[in-house]
Image (cartoon, rainbow, N blue to C red; front, top):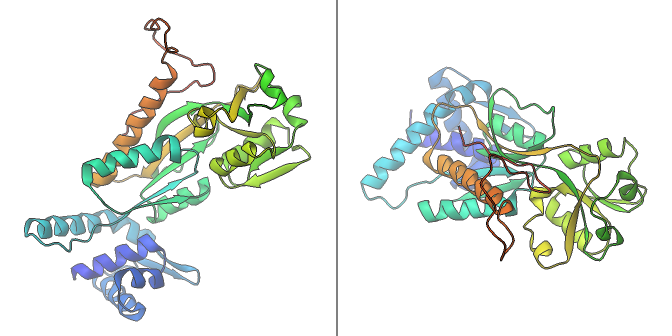
Length: 331
């Protein structure tokens, strides 16, 4: 067994195909494939599922992945101790449904950079099912997804609750509905909408709140950020989790505002997902900690009194107007 064989296998897992892995490792695809095949023969197990759409780590490979990662990390520490400059640092790959990118993930990555310096981090926007599949197959290290009440997480994944909020109507500040304290479902139904595409939680929520009959004029997009830009352009109203827009720059600039939806008690929960393993690499563990810290900072900002007012008294639980939110520390 050679160290480069483990590195090649890690590259295939990370990039999802032999071709992309060979390009990243700067070797030919046949040479990389042969090295992995020899490792499979030596270990007496199949490490990759080779498909027409790409190669992914097998079930047996997932069972061994933690041990192989520990070997590679130990080799990197040895190289660092020996003063080598060519230590290969595996990129962290984070899957997110986009709504958490600006409010939590970006500042958490800033904290990670301050602690570990420059390192490779790839952020992939996707749907909840794609993120869960990427975590299960080893191509993603961490996932941020939104769930509705009753949604389940696969038992192979660990889920930490970061924020619990509520769906709100996102509209331009000069929209007639902005004059109301709350909007009704009938108010919303009469307006053109910017919806999330199928596969996103807020698409399911829209079908639920409109009883399966969506408003007549709709636009569809993949993420909250583009959705907010389309609302700002006057294309319609969007329904988003409050935590995805509360501190948005367009809100601070007075372009967008939000209104609670009357009679609706649905919650949207932002979860941090990872594979269930005994040992978590230090950078990944530090990123998890940073995300929890940023979630707590976000919640604390919701509880701050307006500037110039008396401090709010301490209470056992605070329920902000537009968010019933709470966090759990990372497991």
